[in-house]
Image (cartoon, rainbow, N blue to C red):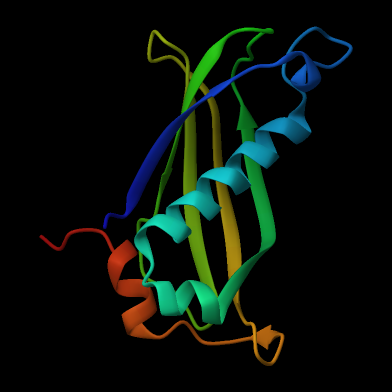
Length: 134
């Protein structure tokens, strides 16, 4: 359990746009995959069954791009606790040389799957994702 999670992605032919690099929508999809995988890996199974997440806002800075066949490492990090139903995640994508290609911040809302409505994030749900205290 950790407030950070990383994994690698490879730019496949279907990720490439008319400018011969990874399409912006693909970066968003990769952010969602990182967040979902982190949630499924580190949340308690009963929390994964009871709650889901929806994106409320993306803020993305594109600093570089990659072409077909290139690999990138995506990292998501949670820097602070939730506020009500909302949680923020930060993302960084780097190339093999460690150069930052994309930085983003997303705001998510937790959804209670029984009611289908936003729900305040309980402390026990947030706990596995909290940054270490000083």
